Length: 559
Image (cartoon, rainbow, N blue to C red; front, top):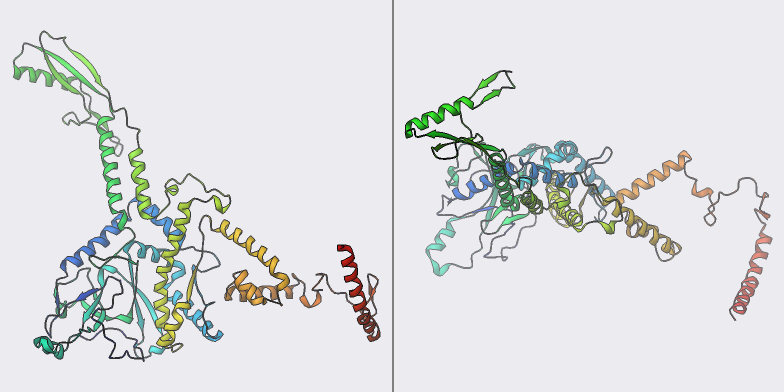
């Protein structure tokens, strides 16, 4: 195989040679498997596959220009990517990561750096929209090959029309000889090389890969961040977009709208029928007489709004003009009647049906078709099931889209020697990405959840310090993350310094009242502060008697 462009991150732990499988690895990412045909050349007929894939991407982008589809896409993108004046659209969450605080701090810093070079805070809407429409997203990770430990220097977007993920089977001379001797052939254990084929033009070659063209470049796997929609056509092993389900519904809506426009233009106007008496004139003269009468009475003066002129278009005849029919002698003579227009032009049930069908295909609630309807600010139990289903759909989209950050962060941490590839495999499942939420019922839902958490906190508070720790209550009962706990503690400390909150050291933990200031002999509410040791001994000696008397009185009261 030709030399690849870019870099590769290899695991230090090699797979055992005894681990074999006749089934190749399937990532379900739309990768094309190239079949070898000899030792020096690899052939495969990819003309149909590539052309169809390009046509699909073009169709998706054309669909996005339709007003109804564009509104549905904007609803999805606006719910998934929420911009705020103070918060970033996405942050890394490390609450479940079992690592030191220094490692967590470095991970957060590197993630912020990746967002800065992507300019994600400003371009997050466009990036997510492109991924949602095309069904795939490519980014080239640019590094300094002489100093790879400096990490990723730049992230550049690549048009999906110009890049393709390829899995090519490795072939050696021994494999060729074994095929010539079937008796020596054992269980196949194919090995594959995975790379990307980049072309400057959105066009892919056919035939031999090694002769792909001067404008084609093979890029190593680790140099590209590849994020797909997760939808795969298993029959053709092709990645699909979330717009795939709406292709038929959109075409039907377009045809219904076009037919409705044609019907209204042809049936809306009222036209007149002129019956002209031609007497006993021959056919030729009768037609000539009919044309003379028609030109005499026809008015085709048209006003041109651009030039301000009045134009005479009598030589042109449109479908909206009147009908002129000859009538022989013996009839009722010259007569003018009116042909009424269409009577059911106001019916739009079919248009509304296909609009709802289009929104259902796109996963957007039907209640969002019309922008006039407001949202019911009631309890979360009154929220429509479609909105709840839509919220879960957006959550799945975020989860899938976060794979892009996962791959970028992996490359950055490994290149900067913060973690090893083996460490990353253990840490990967515990690194989450927290997106901002701005769903229509998210605030109501959060309010009710907060009320329930505070109610549970009030019930569990007497047992804090006895059966539960403060950290456990904050993480499990109040569901606070590490970053939120750190931020809240800093805010509380700052408010104590500013005097907004009282100092806990100066507040009675039982009554919540501030402790009295002054010398030890000051009296408050009839009680003397700063008792002597003798007084304390007397109180301790009297305590058992008081407790015994109290228990006796309690039993008497119960009886």
